[in-house]
Image 1 (cartoon, rainbow, N blue to C red):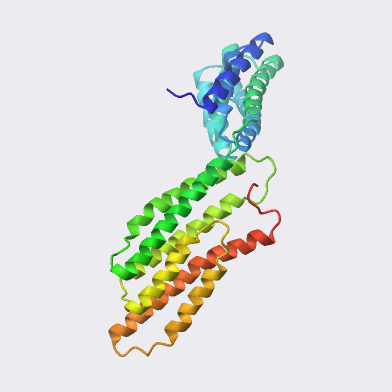
Image 2 (cartoon, rainbow, N blue to C red):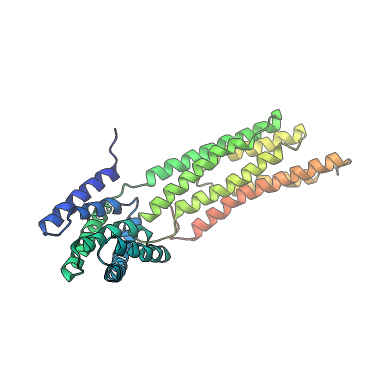
Length: 324
């Protein structure tokens, strides 16, 4: 059984929260530990926003509980009224994270039968201690760039494999099924998730290179899927198949994060120019095939242009670099 970093941080934060609350002589000291457990998030920003939201929702909950218990008494009926008031208000203001923990703290007022200032202070101190230790332990987050780089390499390797399959299909006539792109989309989705986590662990907001990178690759993946579908409906003469295969293989061999795509675009333009020199189609079948092939070339060009535009954006923006 493996014990992860978050489990370790949560357990220690909870223990220290209880210990401090007990030594301060606070009532219901274990509640501070539970608050810590519920407040250790996946990222620094998540923990901070959760902490602020729970303090705000505690103030709201205390006010609504004061009204409810004074109207219907310090019992189950009063607590039901409190929930009828508090839950919709918390949802409306986007404070749903504080519903459970603050509902527990409100029961302290109910059990003591009073809203004396020391008891209100007790509730806020329990909250501050719990979220405080959670924030403290969440200051340390492992550097996620290594995982992001691994995700990039995995995505690029899958792109290379699919491009080589496309190239091979021009010679063999075998289909590159769209279902083969599923793994690529899954890898990109995982990369986007890791990029979001990485960005939320940066206190200072800045343009997220990795988020932009995986969004760019996602756009390319959709275009590549379109190319595989078009290729299933066209036939290319052997002489042109060799040329198309050469360009696709070159794209696969040079597919990399730092490739700006300009040389590939030049090769695609040469393909366009060469293909325009062909005699006009004589039959409907030839015309339709020529149109499909032209669509394939246009989609391939768009595929490379997406990366070229991304590279230009990165180089023109000094704040939008890798290692953000």
